[in-house]
Image: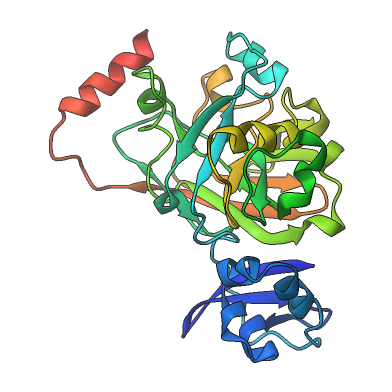
Length: 297
Ligand code: ZN
């Protein structure tokens, strides 16, 4: 099953893709709890079954895609989870997952423009597989971890490298608003084996990243086991599983106004975002000057 959150005149509404088009799940089932992804996942297996029974229907106008996971309680991201990516960054890897977090205000729709800060010239793409949690869980053994997965999405962990690497913590450069497009749909776990999917990123049509999810250092089951060791995972939580090699910063090439970045994960789909400059200036140039020092280090 493929679930999309669409922007409608009544706000964000969960839709299921049918052979004729996208159908509003809350309306079709008569159960308004199922009008959002959070509501559907909160309803557990009953919610998924109800959505799966929705009769095919035509889309209501042109679909306007919101982030496929519009309101995740938590967003975890993995750094250096592909060996070749760590190598190109001259970084070592370890068996310990390099976890950082993002805030929900980072999310963008799968076809939205992404606004890059005009005061940095080091914005970069990171094509990745996203995992969406479907059940409240804690201390999940790796052997059972896939049972708590609701489904999978494609994402682009757009990163502002100078703001990422200026300090020890990656939080600023990984949290510019609207720089985490997610979608286009959530493909439910029953339809997809995540173990060896092809991930590809194109910039202006040129292939820049190509790998398989089987190249991850710490795979999806182990990641879920690890994260659930220190926090309760909840329905809708999103895990960005890390990017393979081929990022721009390794070649000193960065994103600019008008660039189009496409990320495709086999079996899920493609997100496509045009990069734009956010012309708003900081209140002070102080932080900009300090961030620029990261470039020369
Ligand atoms: Zn990433």
